[in-house]
Length: 111
Length: 115
Image (cartoon, rainbow over all chains, first blue to last red; front, side):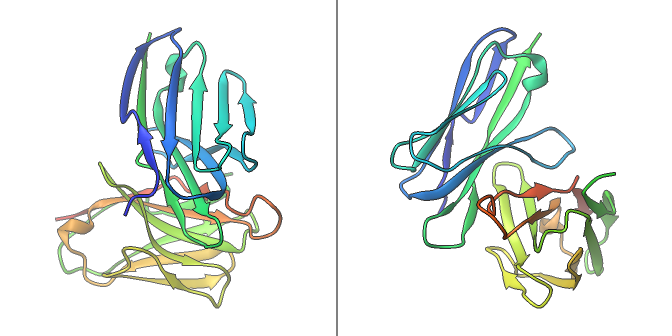
């Protein structure tokens, strides 16, 4: 059973546009991570969110953890071709060790 | 130098062959993991190890075995490779100490093709 659903699955946008990727679950997570994976490479950690309602910024990327710690979003402002990649959310449900990855959002930013 | 290395990076083998994928890390982390990635199926956990004497099955361990030879080394074996084991394989590490224990650090991957 997939506990972390990401949307959209695919996104193709022009350089300079804004976008938001969502990561949703019915389970509560003790923390949640976002990773970016480029072709031929392993996922690279972008951020960890821990507290419900937390907002973290990484240059043009803004990450938010839902108040109930069941969902998260990633917003990219003024996307650039270098943002192209597969974005994955992941986390461990509270009270267990079961680390799962979301279904992924494949982003392509066109110049 | 990369913190998590995997060898080989690419491997083509035939059905029935035994192969081993190796992972080494210099991060000093105690936890290590093996995942496979298939198009449309995301990352799935094969095995994980929380320390040298600890080995645990993940969600898709059938057909695979692992060995944790040292804190820094974790190898994955396919005893008798079959075509549906064709996939990208990733090793990852994490540190159980501190509040960021869920963060995982990945190697560059091994692309395995079983003919």
